Image 1 (cartoon, rainbow, N blue to C red):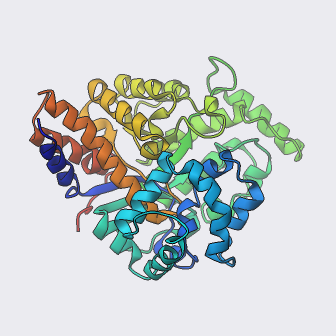
Image 2 (image 1 turned 180 degrees about the vertical axis):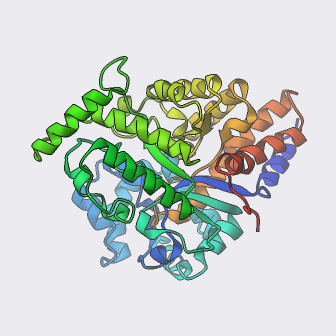
Image 3 (image 1 turned 45 degrees about the vertical axis):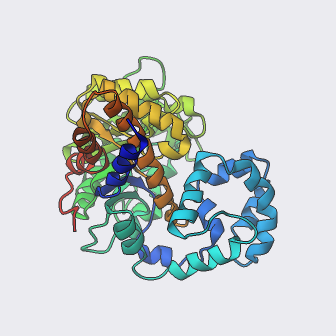
Length: 426
């Protein structure tokens, strides 16, 4: 077959409505408060590439100081840009610069006019123009501060929230006595027992549901010891230790956290929330293996688990969760900018392994300053999906019409069904 039909298939993907299945962007008024320039496009995951290329922490801090001239910051940035421009993170930036803003490249000549163009675009209606009109994104599933709930009637942003403190580092009594400010409306008082905490959590989930949240997020969490199961008695013992010694810090793996995470998942499922789970890459990714979810999946067959990032680098473990469990969906958020080659290989293998209604193809996973780059990431995701589907069309496995049906499922319909989203087209 000739390349022109493949190009035509790829163009058809630009006509598909999109549900962005994971971001960290705040409502538009928060973005409009920010001074934006070319370096805003690097103010998220690309910072890790800059650090790994040798940029010192102080240099990176200065890079994102808008009080400094763009040209001066560029001189610091340029040597590192030459080293990181071929990573998938940077490819999303370049796609955004070229196809959204119309600049051929990012260099010393374009950094200043590009910054001016970005600042000029950072005006009311930005989300409508960029996300809805240009990207055809109909809904964004976003995780941001609870205090920044979308405005009533905002049908673009739909919120998820983390399972309180249940997946962050050491555990202390302050985690019970001093709820995070962003969650204070849901946890207005300290909790003096496990039962009191779980009662507060139940009430919090009900209020979150009333406020329009559609899911809660946790992370793949290893048991405190191999084969351990949630142990209420041991959890009670550790809670009392924290209560008696307010300076005590339990290690990240502990029976109290494990018990509370398990109980919280059950309560969230009872309220109808989808359980989004970070798996794989970040920090000590060994602690985030998708395989840690296996006991939870079996203990909570009524819950629906949205497994993020396809478990990269342990992709086959994540794929096997989808293969072996009816309550697992595979979310390819972030994957296309971790490694485009990985995303293509994992999607292609997923076609062989799991039903077509269990795949979510895209989530940008950006924060608010870098949100323009959602455009470039989405273009990369469409390229990756087109490569997978066109390869199978060319092999005679199915025709182009069936390929487009799969693409619509992956980019829109599956997320709409999983999260119970209505009115995603406008």
